[in-house]
Length: 193
Image 1 (cartoon, rainbow, N blue to C red):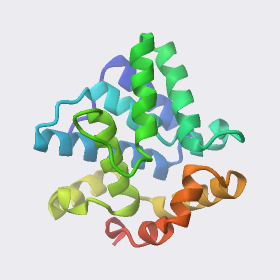
Image 2 (tube, helix red, strand yellow; image 1 turned 90 degrees about the horizontal axis):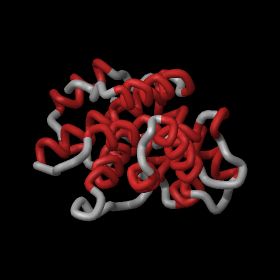
Image 3 (cartoon, rainbow, N blue to C red; image 1 turned 60 degrees about the vertical axis):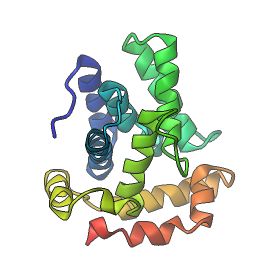
């Protein structure tokens, strides 16, 4: 699967590459690949550029440079994505859609008829981090994606980020996810086997 190569997508990948660790960057890229492949296979009409930029920025506030001490990482990531989209020349409605897509990735479920890009990003990030929706793809496809974009220790890195977020922000989505047992799902993700 090819990544979108519009100027905005190239710039988003450049920003993500500049700030994310290799493990987090590969997670962002895999999140797009899982999302686009699932959407294509299921006939979901989605905006590839919007989905790609959302995938590149959905976890950007887990890196120290964009971490906020006042809001959870998902909200901070949405703010960073909005600023990026403004610089890219996107009009206000498209910038807000991007923020919605970024925020959607932390929801338990997103209605595909209401928010196709948010639905796809929620499914793909859930697959990549906690192994949810593993049966969406064949073992061969999963192996091909992981061969091109290795996990590189994302489970441990991501869990450490979530624990740090939860400790400093007990009302944040990472804190809620940890209370709901995400640590066991992250460490038990079959993609790491």
